[in-house]
Amino acid sequence: MGLIAIDLDGTLINNQHEISTENINAIKQAQAQGHTVVIGTGRAYFDVQEIFKKTHLSLYIIGANGATAHSPSGTPILSVPMPDEDSERIATWLEANNIYYEVFCEHAIYTLDGSQDILFQEVKDLEHHVSKEEFQFINMHLKKQLSQSGYAFMNSFEEIFQAQEKIYNILAYSFINQKRLAGVDAFKDEKDLTLVTSSPFNFELEHKEASKGNALTYLAKVLNLDLDQSLAIGDSENDISMFKVVSNSFAMDNASEDVKKHAKYVTSSNDENGVAKAIYQFITD
Ligand code: CA
Image (cartoon, rainbow, N blue to C red; front, side, top):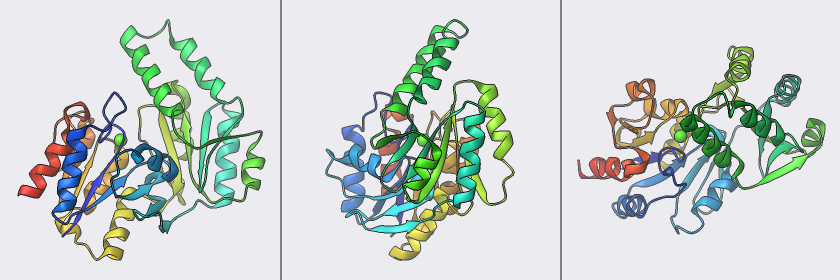
């Protein structure tokens, strides 16, 4: 038996920010057949718990892009924090460049008090420079970003640092391409860090050993499950590391061409129960 690893945003969650009954039923059916289902997401663990609260599903959770893993009962299985000196340096650079950021820790997503105004200002500035559709797309992403559970607002990075929590990743977010690309450029060649993106408007930095694929490999080892009989489903660049370690991978139809290229198969979009279709294809094969 193997694992079934599923990304959340753009994959299991549809564009109405919901998990469909079809997808929930497919997960239950896979579990009934003995498969172990794991969520692999960039979101923080406590945020994912909140999302699944009403579903009564029992799931392993890989959070913060592979920096954490928890059992269905909440036991920590894996923890790969960032080196402190890297986090401080990154935060300093982002602040100097007026880029909004979030610091993902054990119990909260820390962000600077008032810093979300940077995003509101960016959206306001873009309103008359993009099409109506693009503007809607931007607003949808803004809403999604700020609807995470577990925000804690601090006055400075020093205050975050003094909270003495493990820092799992730093997420930088901007609707302005030049700002985001400058950030990617500044950090893409860091030898001790991994840079991934999970939305069109962010980039995230974490420990170089932290990835969804590495966490999945670790989980398979701990649970004595076979990656050669495992499935991964995703839509973003940060899902490619999962595709690489399993025998069966599905990219969502809403994924980019590059992400699709790395997957063995393509399933329907997140708005057409692509996850359920991929699961049924996998478990009936
Ligand atoms: Ca995704």
